[in-house]
Amino acid sequence: MHFDPYSPAVDADPFPYYKRLRDEAPCFWSEEAQMWILSRYADIVGAGQDWRTYSSASGNMMTELPNRAGATLGTTDPPRHDRLRALVQSAFLKRNLEGLADPIRAIARAAAEELRGEAVFDFKDFSAKFTVRVLMAALGLPSGDEAIVDEDTVREKAVLMVQSDPRTRAKGPEHLAAFEWMRDYAAQVIAMRRAAPRNDLISNFAAAEIDGDKLDDREVLLTTTTLIMAGVESLGGFMMMFGYNLATFPEARAAVVANPDLIADAMEESLRFNTSAQRFKRKLMRDVTLHGETMREGDFVCLAYGSGNRDERQYPDPDRYDIGRKPRGHLGFGGGVHACLGTSVARLATRIAFEEFHKVAPNYSRVADQLAWMPSSTFRSPLVLELAVH
Image 1: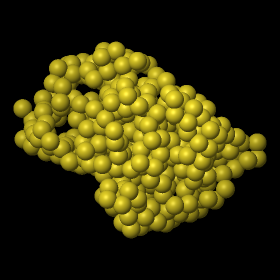
Image 2: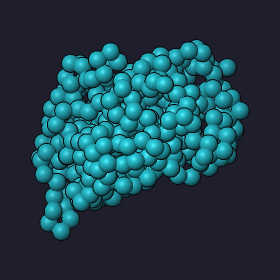
Image 3: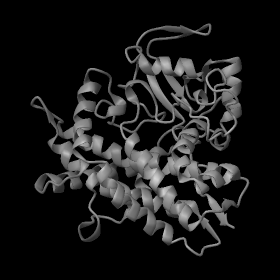
């Protein structure tokens, strides 16, 4: 048996590989990745909750960016993680998320209207514009007359940051250069918001304080850099996968178009069925024996969230996309102490985006049977999603 998380074949369709791992080798050593792969739901949830054993402090992406570990929510363990999360969360709470609903709807409506009358289009033309514009509004990235760079450049660099070279199984020069670019960009934005604070997340990060404790400069910089990357790629990838699922399953699409109140349940099923956040990494702090295999202290472990979400031990008939399922406990936004902090924004933005998109294009289907997928050992989404309007 082989499992190579850097393989284009895994990018294209990881689920047959996952099923074989769950059934035959639920604790599997991947020579290609040089780490253990946990594929069953219960094992992944248990590892996510046991941060003392499965540490994130050495990085959480399968192929990590340099100098990021130890300064972001995803790359710290308690108690440092708890301190950082509390400070970042306080910045989120100061930003009224419901107050974003009207601006988000205006952004979604404008992006959708650009597609009106098109017989065939790439859904990414909608999702990319929408995602970056929402991110700029929520985080406080400069736009309009004060813009430092155009929105397409922000998106391009964020996507490059999460990719890896499938041949070398590492970040290539273009990926590292994108990370350096994003850090420089974030530093400029932070300086602008410190000089003239606003009611946005970056201003709140810079000023966040609990009992006299504040984020230090490195934490503000790398947390902001990571949030831009995660906001663009995680939200963008989530929207692409949701669009992919609705275009692939016409009965589900017709149901949510007829009754937009079903979008929320359909999103949760998409997060279970086809999450864009497929695999994240941990480092073992002690020896662990699981399913007859002994993983050693210092070994790296992959938590295959995408596999756990398809585990028939947790979800009956897991390979069926069922928007009435209500899949409680799914791993589409991670789990344990590292569950995604931006879930409320992601759910709000995606619901509104598809409400507005369906007003312009209520009846659509995929053009191509075979898709090109983003080369990433951590995230999964189509590079292009051509849709035909009927």
